[in-house]
Image 1: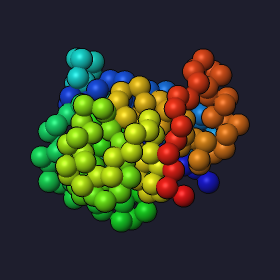
Image 2: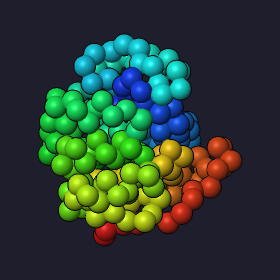
Image 3: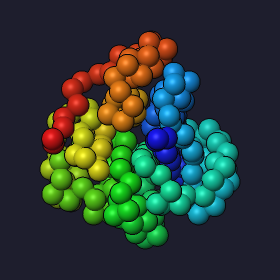
Image 4: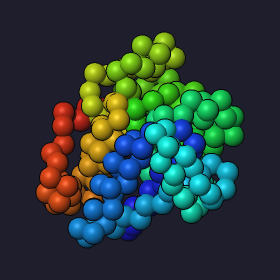
Length: 193
């Protein structure tokens, strides 16, 4: 069975938050994992301008229930105010999609109500806000609470993606990706189960 992954792209997205996981997932596919990763935009295909000005062409419109895993990178507060995106995040999770947030992308999940009362983490500068909004903030690089997986700041998106590959495709694929990338997962993954 193929793991269908979508990475939600939007103007202001932090480059490393989206490209780090995309790189891990691409290497996993090359290492033999049954993974298909698609960059998606909330409304329609098109170009996004990332936080530091990098332009990325996004080929697909986001269909909230058309994946097994959705990664929401940080960087853009405008998604927090987008009622359609927030409703669609809830819709996706209710349909069985695992929702993952990287860095301040977790604050978008919080705005949708997905972190309330649940173990989660985010960038260290946003942890107080996450707790104030009802998240049970865990001091970990990656927090796995089943259908909600969150990661701390920026580079922790690489660790989140490696963890998801370990969880869904096996440790041998994740180790192969680490070798290719000359990177070792950092920190311990906090798991609720």
